[in-house]
Length: 451
Image (cartoon, rainbow, N blue to C red; front, side, top):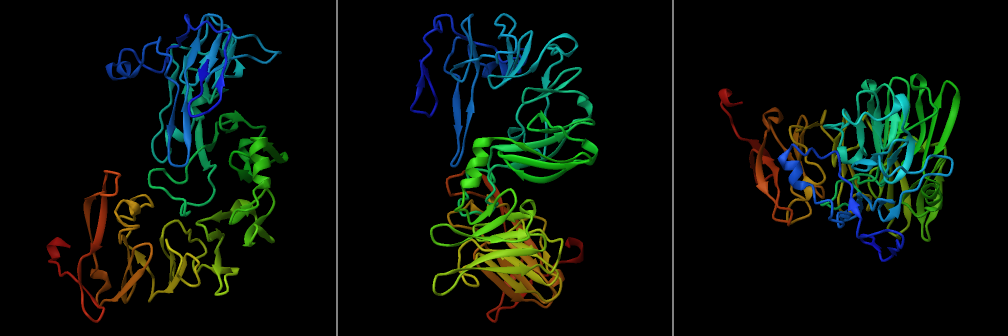
C-alpha cells in the first residue's frame, strides 16, 4: 500500500515485493561532497516522498523506487506506451525527477524520449544546470546537460550552448497586489510555465514547439492551459493542458476574466460579466482585485453609493509607465495602489496631481512582502518628491508636506526585525527631517562633506 502525501486515497500495489523495495540513488547528489552526502537518506528508507506546503500551493517531492521487477514513482508503476520499448529495470538510473534506461528517457515517471545510439545520455558528464537571478530555479523545472545535449523536464534538446531562458509566467494571473496576498508565499506563486529557446528551437516547459525561432512571436499565452504563436508559417495553437483550458473557459466569476479571444469584467451579482470590446487579452494585465492595465490605460472597478459596480478608464500621463509598485510616478501624476478600499469611490486606486515631475526615492522600494513584515498591515515606506512637496505613502494613506528645498530631502534607512512571526530582518525608512505644525517638511541640514 502506498500512502499518498496529503491525500485521503491510497494506492494498492499488490504485485510489488516490499521486502526487496529500495529507493534508487539520486545521482545528482555528489557522494564526494560531505554536505550533500549527509542529506542523502538511506536507500532502504521508503518514506522520502513528501510535500512542501505553502499558504496557497503545495509541491510534491518524489523518488524512484524499485523491487527488481518494477520501477515506481509517486506510488505508481512506471510503464511505457505500447509502441515503445518496455522499462529496462537493470539499466534504470535517476537524477532527481529525471531518469534513463538503455532505451528511454523519463521525467516524473513518464517516458519523454528515446535513449540510444549517438543520442544516449552521457552519464559521466550529466549535471544539473544552475541559474541565478532574475531566474528562480524552483520555477524552471529540472534542467540538466551532458557533453552533447540539454535535458529540460526530460526532453532532449540539441545545441545546448545556445540555450536561453526567454520568459516565465505563473499560473496565478490575479496580479501581484491581489487581496489574497500572503507574505509566506512569493506572489505570484507557481506552478510556472517557462519559455526558452536554442539557436534552432523554441520550447515551452522543455517541450519543443513546431516554431521558427527567428520569426516567433506570442499571440496568446494562458499559463498552464494554452500557447498560441505566429511565425513565418502562420499562426499556431498548442493546448498545454485540456483540463486547465476547460476550467479557464468555465471560470466566469473572476474580477477580470481573460479568455483566449476576449476580456470581460464582473459587472454585477451572480458573476454577471460584461465584455470589453477591442482588447487583446495578451496585453491586458490584472494588477489587483479592482485595477488592471492595458497599454497606457488603467481599468478601475468602483462602487457607487448605491453599491453598484462601475468601470472607469484612466489614461496614464506617461504611455510607457508600467504600474508595478504601490507608488508609481508619472510625468505629472502619482498613481497609488491602496491596500484598503476607500479612495475615490472604493476603487483601490488613488491618482493625484504633482507639482512638476514626481521623483521616487528608488534606492529602496519595498517589495509587497517587505511591506507586510510588521504587526500592522504596512510600514510607511514609499517616498517621493516633486518641485514643491515631499510624499510619504504607507499603502493605505498618503501624506504630503510642503518643503522649501525638495532636492535636499533624504530618506534614512535602517534595518528592523519583524515582530509579525516571520523572524527576518528587513529595511524600513523615514524622512530625514522634521514636520512643522503647519504641515511643512524641513530637511535635516547636512555639511557638504556628508552629502
